Length: 267
Image 1 (cartoon, helix red, strand yellow):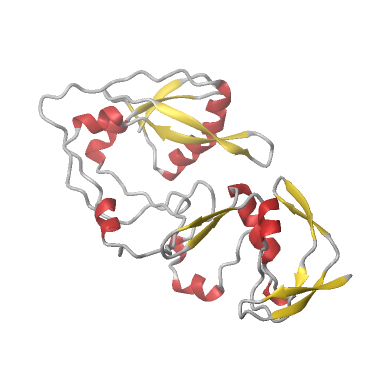
Image 2: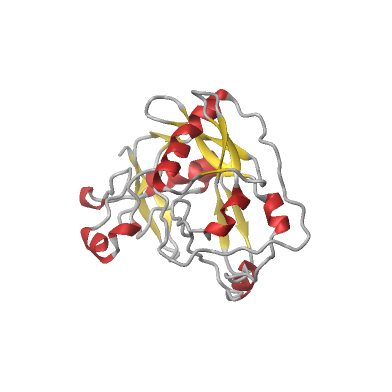
């Protein structure tokens, strides 16, 4: 601390604050030098106009609130930079450990143990009815690169072993689409997601009523004055519903083994 300067508080009374030595602040791609004021009586950390300018902040005013916006990449680092916590309050970064109490309350069968878990439900199989007089869709498989075939091979083999896929000979055929993920596996090989193009199947089956509420109906139930929302990320929460055996062939596709070059139909 080098000096004290007078500061006008919110109560209209001036008081002295100590000026701390300049420190370098790095937030995402922005690096600035700034000298903070030490105000022990302040209940929260405050950002002054000078630092807001350095951080490229934008402030918007409305009738009932003030909104501060920062470049999206800076937001997580800024929150971390302005949060004070004792050592026992700091949470470690990385995957969270699930409390043992929660593990015991949830059925063991609901926890995923590997990337190929299917979450198959023990429920009545789904029945699908084809429209009358339809033309059976049979679309040839698009060309797939050798890399993508090897990327899908582990998934296909696992699904066959689990019984989620079976060998078949069907008049139906729809293409599969390997979608490459941005990450790599531990061996540095690309990872692919298995996707099947079922748009033509949707056109030949009889549509059923929706079993879930329309999302727009749910949104209209939110009070107009609501300003805070909770968001739950369910990207890794999934389950599989079995299909009635009589309709398995509707979902047939052609798979080419990248090692043998042999093509066959699976469903």
